[in-house]
Each structure stands twice: as C-alpha cells, then as structure tokens.
Length: 637
Image (cartoon, rainbow, N blue to C red; front, side, top):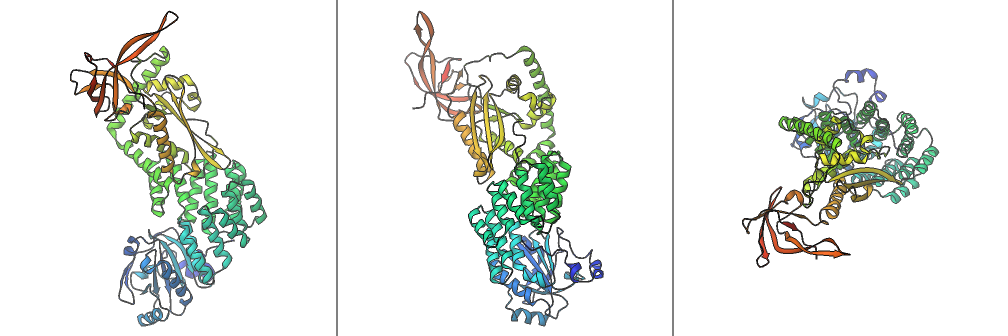
C-alpha cells in the first residue's frame, strides 16, 4: 500500500506550541503560497511570480540549514537533473534559513547543486516562523500548496516518490514513471514506488503491464484497480475483500466497482468507510469524490457537492472532483459557480470534458446576459405555444407545398430511457447531448432548434419526459418548431462499455430517418466522438437525399432564383434539372402518374440562407422557364 503523505506531520515532529505559533503564517494545503523576490548565491535574481509564469509543472520550495538539509538537498539534485535545469518542468528554490551566505555557497558547491540556493530575506520571512527544518513545499504552477513535508526521516526517504505521485495526480503518467524508476534507483521504498508506477500504467490503459507490476509486489489494491478498469466488477470486489478492510484504497476501488455496477447503496456504505481508512491524499480524495458521485446519482445534489468539495480540499489537483462539482453547480442553475470551478480544473491540466462543459457554460452565460435575445425568445415561446394549442385542436395538416424539400431542422427532445446509466464523470450525458447539438449547428448542413427555446417551450407547455414518449405529442412539437426531424440521444451499457444511441425521426412520415450507435469509451476524446457522430449524420441524412424545389424568379437566365438555399444544404456548383410533366404512365386503363421531362439544367452560382441564384447551362429548344416550375437534383452517377 502507498505510504500516507505527511501533511500534518508538524505536530508529530515538533512541540504543539510551535505549531500554534505559525497557524496564520504558514500556508495550508490548497492555499496560495506567498510570493518572494531574492538573490541566489550565484547572483541570480529569483522571483516566485516569474518562476510560475514560465509554467513549470511544479515548484519545490525547500527550507533548510546546512546542518539539517543535506539528504533532501541531494534528492532534490536528482529531481533537478531529470526535470529541472534546461528542461523547465520543475523549478527548485532552496532557502537557507538564518544561514550565512558563504556557508550556503559552500553547501551548494560541495553538493554540486544547480538549482537556486537562497539566503532568507524580508520577503521570505513571510513564511516564518517555521515549525522546524527541513521543510519541503510542493507547489503547483498556480502557487497552490499541494503538499508539505516536514523534517527528514520519512519525508526524505520518499521525496522522489511523493513528487512522482504529484505528477500522477496531474495526469502526467510518463513523467510519473520516469520518477518512480529514479526513486527506486535512489534507494526509496521499492514497493511504494512500483505501486505508483503501476497506477501510472493503469491510467495509460496499459492494463497487462500494470497487472504484472502490481502482481510482482503483491499489491491487492493495484490488482483490484486493474480488474475495475477491465469492467470486471465482481473480480475487483473480490480482490478488495481479499486485501482487507484496513486497506483504504482497495475498499475505495470496491466502492467504485459497486457504483459502476449500479449498487449505489452498497457503494455508499463502502466509500464512507474507506474515506476514513489510511491512504494517500489522492486515494482519500477518490473515496470522497466517489461518495459524492453516488449521492449525485441518487438525486442529492447538495450532498454530492459536499463530497466533491471535500475531495478537492484533500487533493487540490483532483480535476475529476472539480469537474463533478462544476456539473452539480450547472444542474443547480449556478452557472457562474460552475464556470469558476471548471476554470480552476482547466488550469491544472487538459481534460476534454472540462473544456467542453466550460465552453458550453460560457455560451449559456453569454446568452443569459443578452437582453434582446431573451425578449425575442419570450415572444417566440408565446407564439409557439399558440401554434401548438391550435395544432393540437385541429389535428395534423398537410404542408401547403408538398413538392419542395424542407430544410433539415432537428429538434432534440429529452428522453427518459437513459435513466440509470452511470457515468464516472457527472454531467457527461448533458455535455455530450449539448455538444452534438452545437456541432451539428456549426456544420451548417443541419439546423438545430435552440436548446433554450426548446426547454422553455416544454416548460411552458408543462411537458415532461413521460409526455414526450407519446408519438402524437412528438410530431405536433416537430410541426410547431418547423422541425423536419426529431432527435433522441440515449445512453446505455454493453458490459463495461458506455454506449451512445442517436435516432432521427422524420416528422412527416414518422419513419426512422437515421440511427447510429457509438462506443463512447473507444474514442480518444469527446470532440473525436462528436465529430464522428456529426459526419455520420451528414453522410446518411444530408448527402443521401435528392433536393427538389421551385423556380421563384425566371426573368433572368443568368440569375434564376430557386426556393432552396443554405438551410436546405445547397452549395455553389450544384446542378438542378428543370422538369415538366411528361407522358402519362398507364396500366389497366388507369393513369398511375406522369413521366418527368427535363427541359433545362441550372447550376448554382450563389447561395443565400433561404434561396439560391442559378444560371441556365442547358435548355431544350423552344423551352421557356417560368416561375413555379419544378426543379430536381439529378441522380448521382
């Protein structure tokens, strides 16, 4: 099992009276550390703000004396050689507390130290009085204190492994693995370092290698984690039980396995117990986040938020907990709070769900601040309500123009069938639905009814998901919204895999216009998944139909106007046949229809939203074009 980090070790190493004296001076985990400016023993100007603006992964501040800091200073030299100096991933500043500058210079020379060695000054005194030395701070690039290690002993013994675990929490498995190998070479606890290496392999999806690593050191918690990531939930629970109740992280893995299997009550009990067991910071944070996720799924958003916030307090680098908190705030309608939490998560590392949710929420905030837009929507909702009630009373009527291809307008309706499908990340289902809608709208081949308009209309009509199951209600809504198609996005699971199901229903024929299924877990990112969905819809719905319409103005053969435009999918260079009714088709003495006779060929030169401009490229002798004549896209060769 991983060693427990010594964040509160101040009380263990030094008298309580000393700790009481520094409660307000020293930053606590999750707080910003004070900035400082100093000159190192080589005459270099060192400014903490300048250091963090260069965006290193981490900054390590080491407070020491020449009599107490040699062991850790040597460990820091190793870290500096790997990721410091010219690589710029890591920056280290060692502060000799109340030390003579000549002694510090000699200390740096003897140990061949390349990182900054500073003498304390008035700025640095803001960190004091110190509870005891040496004292090591691991600081994020936002100047947030992630971990404090006091004294030598265990702090010195596992320093490189602690930094490796910090990289793991930052979502940097390759850097983690480099440091775990260095930790073993430096003589740190091999099992602890290899355990961290196994979790790095797991995060990369290298489950066979991770299993081999965990198996070599008999890490039950690691083996349980591998089983969990393979979707073998019963196996994960069995291995965790074998590890015993005292193994805090093994029990957390068990709780997550129960959660993914839909056993929420069992998961809550397990995770509550595991959160109180010994484990590293990031592991305890996973327990709290998991407990919050269970509460969220059970519908208690406030309890969920409390769990997520507790996870962040334990591990300020927990992007998952921050992301979940953002989703909870969004669900509560607290968009500003959601944006603030997600911005904090984005500052820690790249995460596609965070990026997608933050973009969506910023767009929603901007729309909410648009007063004119709000007034237009309110007027539009009132009109749509009247149209819905009138249509409901009158029944469905045929369109006035049955020939012209209508523009592809899609209204995505909420569904109830994905209830109970569990995602590890809160808000994943909402983010995916909104992103599909947004990307389809951006593609400009399909129009999507604005989400705000649709939500407000459903609220105005008091239509919930249960009423929307009714097909007549669906078709009436489609007609009111001028939507050619209704879209439905559902989620389900096939074994451990999360699946997205999309259906498009034609509002005129009630037939299924398109459907697709995608395994969410097999795509590298949300944008990759959504792009694939949008391409498939364009291929199956837009590109596979033959457009037909009418001539709107035939007075100029170099500028013939047709009633099809960008909203119908028309593009410059497209061609249309101008057709007339031809010879009848008869059988059994009955006229079954008429052949189509092509009298001219049009080529699109310019496209506007609701119409296009064409030129006549070919025309039968004697043919005359007129307003109202039918046009039709030729068959593909």
